[in-house]
Image (cartoon, rainbow, N blue to C red; front, side):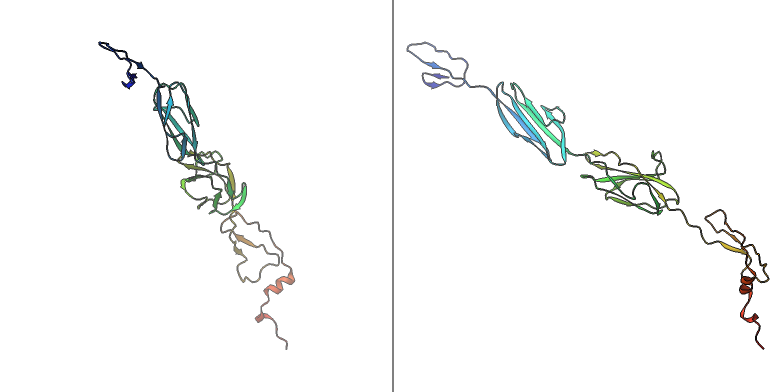
Length: 262
């Protein structure tokens, strides 16, 4: 306010007292303004950022953008959550405000299994299981079970940091099911598709011959040959074998028994 051309300040009242001469008084006005303070945590931005001056009754929009591989975790407006929004508009501003955005890493995608291939057979009892890396994964969980529902597991490790894991102590001739998920600070992925493999069937050891005994003599020309299993098959499929008289003579004749010519 100007009184006789001199500023009296931003007053809302002025009184002329004991008036003895002419005077002037002039008032000017300005729109009220308010500040909105915008901030963003790590791994993202908010625009515009910092302190913004907004006229009374005006609107102000803010855009929240996460860094690649991250997403908006939350946006607080005047300390109250507005959700994981990527844009927020203050309308008809009549007071000061604050807006703050936070971000978190994306949850990794479910891994894709690599080897052994699904339904593989004749797999060793100490195989190495492998899968493709999931972007952003910090650790993986590998589960192995004899049940495709994984009601129980024979292997369950959530601390694996690589994309392969050796497994030992499996049983021969058994179907195993396996799956993998990935985890980071943003959360845990779904499990991969369940794959299976069958371990190799154990080969039987050589049978132990029983009869005729080694180097036996005077054996029938139609003997029955008998052997006993060591382990593996529960029986030996041993058929009686007929030896011809000529073959028997050949088998039974030793150098010391060959008649010398006179």
